[in-house]
Image (tube, rainbow, N blue to C red; front, side, top):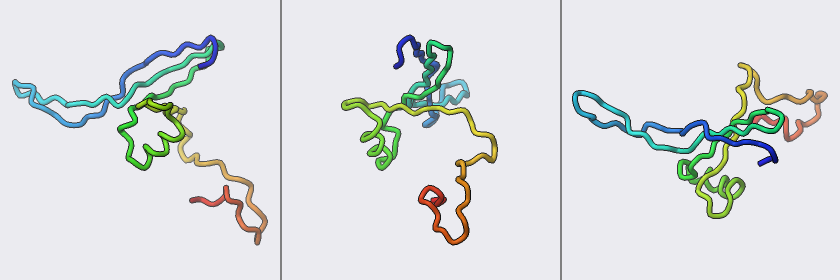
Length: 111
């Protein structure tokens, strides 16, 4: 965390995992907390939103990648950054097309 920045918890992130009969004809959802939404405000007033999610929500293959690259030893949570939505129709920026006959650069391959 940068010096003179302030981090605060904005709320819990919950997912519905079932429901139960609460009596008197009411059905309520059963929720599981999967993490928290956080906000960091820097000394200049810039704000950054991010999530701290419970690692056990990940599929095993994604968990292996996150555990290797994004978690401190012994931690059971990882950080996911939140970005402003892209304008509709905006995709990955494309590079200038190569002249005909040249093979595409590795970054230009769409998969």
